[in-house]
Length: 326
Image (tube, rainbow, N blue to C red):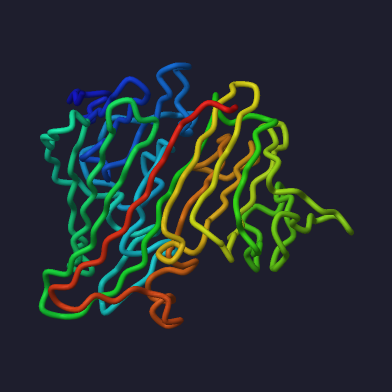
């Protein structure tokens, strides 16, 4: 089933079967606003304390304007704002700030399916997303394609900004991820609340804490009382798979992707200790597959960006599932 509605001035497209409900905000970057397990009524995606605000008179120019949490696409860049061939690309790219074209798709198999498309003004690249919920399935399927319709080669890096939150996320949740290494930034974003040592390269899953000889198991998720805020990059993935379990709810969120396309997981940990505005007070867990750790300009310099020739395309798939433990 697919429905179209409005919430706080934003148009919604909702895909639903008997297991899941998934809502998308087409005019707000095609954000995936909710991912709900219908048996329990639990939405696993984080919502910021201020929530989704009505759209303003002008389109946002920064990722954190009206940031409601949830799940965004980062394209054609991730991380810091940068300039590429004279074009300014904002923090976390362009497409999360743009309205996406939307089509409801007919599916002979009875699935709920929709198609979304947007174009990056900075690169001329086209990004497409097909979303599908099959009957009786606990899995949201995303089939995505980048196309270069211009007459010149174009580069990009790409990421998915997925943040889990309460009521699903709580103390006692457990992360399963086949990573090999933990990297942390050279400088701490919020030194007053960071619990991880900066500039580290450690084997997964034990990170160095800031106290002498302190080791922190990153698989164990604390509650908001931890009052900490950290970033890390997790690499050396055997496969593109992660799962977060909530034993109390008996619910698992899992994500599957191609680790050759997205070899890094950006592990954002605002465990109640994000004190600087505009993120003050949030509690969540970012489990974000990225193509590179670096913005497009730096990724090009490091030869980590993907380049498409004129007329070229590049495709990949992701799957997000909500299943019962045991």
